[in-house]
Length: 351
Image (cartoon, rainbow, N blue to C red; front, top):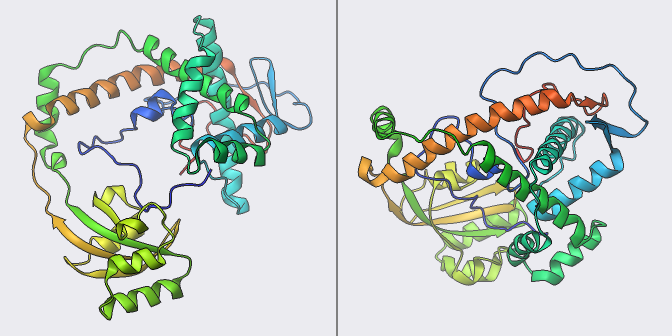
């Protein structure tokens, strides 16, 4: 599956809460992530036993083999665009985090089944179809990508069922979380008023090319007076924006890769900037317009802030339950996959 080429990352909410993780992370939807525990994990003495050759870990009597683990990573790559690092040091850290992520999702999956949670094939297929609709080339391209990875739609459906069952389990485990009170919302707003501002936004045109030299040539033509939109249509490798003259819309710095944001938000209105490298190539941009930051009133952010605080409260309940479930499972990792903190929930393996 080809990752979209635009430099915009997923939009973040305007209300920014400290140490907050997204709803998707809380729900184990998108990348099968789990929220971090809210308190320190208890010390657990793991059994010192020999794992079978080729094992990644053993949890609740079940062994995850390296072959099965590799397949799970292939599925994450196909469905969620998880990128496996190539350099050895980063790959080692990634493998340890990914092993814990897979182990914990299996623990959660077992807990969901114990609660009688069953996800139907039709529900999972609906979610899969939603993923396929976001794939360039549609179903044919998606199936071809799965084939290249040695996977089938059934493999992906199994992973989607895990995320859906985790979502339902999360709902059950957090159903009795006390509701956030009106005074809590007001107090939080009073303490973080400056964080509630609508961020500065910039309307940007962008051209993506494969090399720094090519970007420098595009920039030179733009500075010489060639229409930027025309250059984008002629030169940009970003198929999603080139037909629109490179227009990526009005965005905040938080929606962009940091090197790109730093450069774009230092340029004046009408100014050209670049070349700047992102994960998708070398970029040249133009600032079309600038919308200054502006404060937001309590009335404007009230409902969003209340929902965010409620989600944080649920996340705390969930993380406490999850930490206990991990400790009870006493996962045994092979030395090459053992994480530094095996008894706490995993972090985002996409970072």
